Length: 257
Image (tube, rainbow, N blue to C red):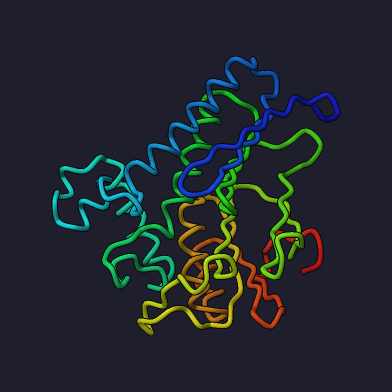
């Protein structure tokens, strides 16, 4: 409890990471809070069960191998494919899960989509404010009592102990980069791993699924993709490999980057 406000936190191992959930019930009963968080965790595990490509038995893995047709898949697959089509258009083709070397792979959008769905469930349950953080892909709703908006620290690619900046967030933010997993982001135009000199890209806006896809594409596009992000109604921060930072004019940084 901070300043009289109840804060409920939970960490859920899922999707190969740990998803952090923070809820401000704003007067909702604790029994409701706990059941809503449990349902949010079930949503995250459901996404993993449907979309994981590390397990051969998931519907997406089977679809990619041609063992089942799209109509045999859960409805979430059709929904995510539609979001990928929207993201491909919004990113001017920099995010294109159909152009990856091993076939259709929506990984650059699915984690954000899953966190978004979990946050929507918390909100629909009647909780006052909350945040779902899936390894840097963050969906929020409502506001904490002590601030006008959620305050989020974006880690520096140089070290998890340092922050690139702090922002006031209304909605969602996603961060992509190669500083933890190496050069895993694909430049669909060069048909090679991304080499735009970007250490990390953060994109904020109303929809975490689209922010996640735009951030992934921005790692490959570099600063030439910033106007594309703005045209989609989102704002962005780039941390370049030389340590310099570049932002769109509306990026909501509180601390200097």
